[in-house]
Length: 140
Image (cartoon, rainbow, N blue to C red; front, side, top):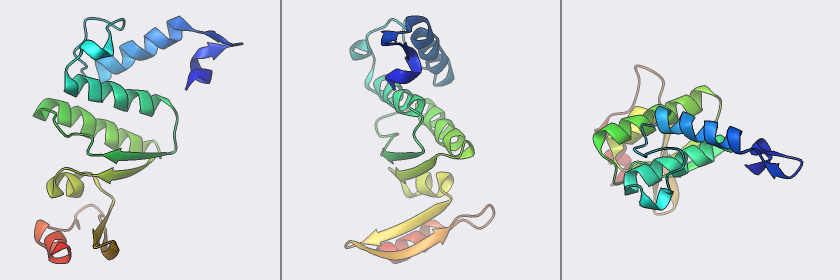
């Protein structure tokens, strides 16, 4: 969001660069510096940049559609940490996950939708998360 980094219509480059450095470190984005062109980064690192951009916008709700697709294990963990942090900060996250394990591990609520209709809603309180079988039962 430009208002966060602009004063009286002028871009505050120092604040913008500090934010870039913060996310490069926090998400382990492999870039030579905060000045690196995103188009020259790997696909996984580009994906992390997009997530950081949206996270910095201050939204109360985030829709994440397969945010870990194509990422290696380490990058996935960075994204998982970011999703958990968003939830801890009170951001509502609607997640379309790549795997059922990912959905179970990250979700507070899971909704199984089949043929456009809600089949089952699971509240995922600690110690009482649904199993793969529970989810598959309503998916098939």
